Image (cartoon, rainbow, N blue to C red; front, top):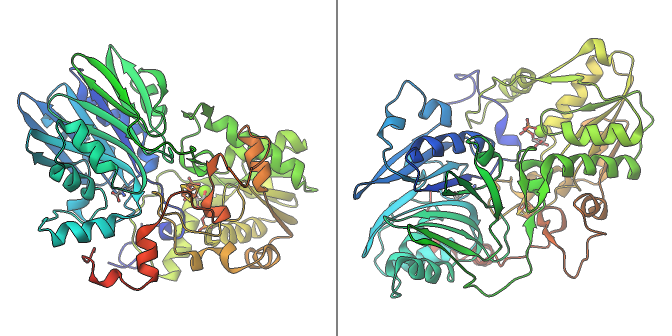
Length: 488
Ligand SMILES: O=P(O)(O)OC[C@H]1O[C@H](OP(=O)(O)OP(=O)(O)O)[C@H](O)[C@@H]1O
Ligand SMILES: NC(=O)CC[C@H](N)C(=O)O
Ligand code: SF4
Ligand SMILES: [Mg+2]
């Protein structure tokens, strides 16, 4: 279907896509419903599909469907009512590997010797094709095309003892980023990869432990935040208590700095830092580094709002909502035609003419990916009568793709990969353009600067410094991916 037949499709293919949310709760009579609420709070991390698996009296029950949590589990379906049991895990998906086919919707489930296991994964494995190819040659029959299923097969084939040991054995063979929540008949397991690229927090409600991608999923159900799961940590809850292991080779943690810039919800606290405060601090740094002579600071909503507030406060320039975002614009993931693309953005953002007319404005956004949003927003603001338009970006130029769980376009589609700052300014049509420096960004998240020898975060989409090996990319560059299983 094209955009012409679906006028409600939006220019979503142009921007960064989020990256999956996970949730799990163990030993609570409302486990299914609480998981649905947790996923609802994590909806910003993935809008393609959602699923919940519960365990009740000897059987696993799965409801996995395309669409938004509210639509899937709303009053018009029986899906929520079916989710009986005291144990549950759930997943919001934005695919990074294997496409959006229904069979890829998580949690994935399999029956192993010793019982069933359901797995929900946020992240992306960087040797999944290589592993999958070997497994298929050995006779494995994959049910999905997602990278996550590799973990299930490796777990199933592990010669180790209990399921936790099998899972650890499997994870020792994978490379890449993962925050996982897994459920068996007797255990709830939470794991973060040794670099801790993606977030995972631990909470508690009425004595029932909870894993969630972000703390906002605890807030929605009134659960208490306990702590972050550590990079490389495996936490296992059973009826008898909790155990924690660090079975992987230790690495220097590299949490994704883009979580603070864009992905995580501003009201979440991840890795000990409140996201809203981090974004405001980025805005303040930006104001010090790249001031602008202007009458108003205008955020590009929603993502630009906290940084614009910080910029406004530090620069002492009034903050105004000069662009309004329509929150009822759906996401359909259909590549629309150019004409409809334009209509899409107009439907999403509209200028507040009375505020902008005759004013010199500083527009603040968190990132420029392809530059489609910024180009159109700038034109919109000029059409609304702004006399000067300056653009400040709350991240360094995005020059490289992410292979760790965020669906970024190929690097040749990234504006900053193809153009220098002057060319970008011309392309988006602004009077001036500046990005926060890497050191400025690190200062905003509590570091003195970025230590190039041992950076504290993953910042590869800005720096090209990828902390985790990318075996599949290496194989692809050598032109050898063709013999691998086709993933479509
Ligand atoms: O340069 P581009 O390729 O156009 O993409 C960049 C824009 O995409 C994202 O916002 P998005 O509109 O997806 O969502 P938001 O409402 O959360 O800011 C990001 O925050 C930028 O505003
Ligand atoms: N965005 C994500 O974290 C996706 C998880 C997993 N790689 C998938 O494609 O299903
Ligand atoms: S490459 Fe960028 S988006 Fe991906 S994990 Fe690293 S910092 Fe985050
Ligand atoms: Mg945005």
